[in-house]
Image (tube, rainbow, N blue to C red; front, side, top):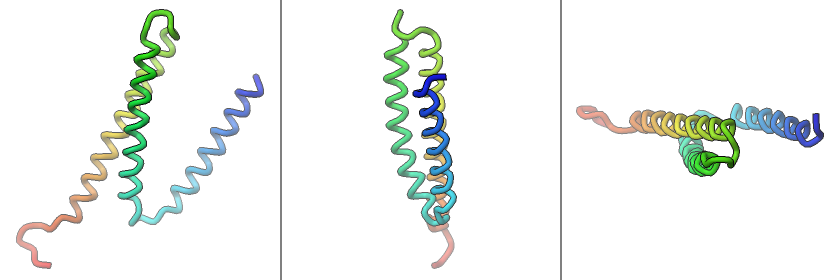
Length: 103
């Protein structure tokens, strides 16, 4: 294995560990605002995935593997964005006043 590949794996594992530790310490009251921010970042990821999938879709510019990976990136980013917005909308519905109830 090359040194670049090994260092990439090490960075990935460390980033996953640090991300897990940071997210685990977030209080429940901050989950909705953080999810809205994450949806914005996922939207940017989705645009990037579409650009990469379109760029690798041409003949002789990356082959089938790049096209499949681009499609999977678009699919995963779309699921993440839609799911995040559905969860955020559901959480915000909990704060709306219900008809017939007095504060």
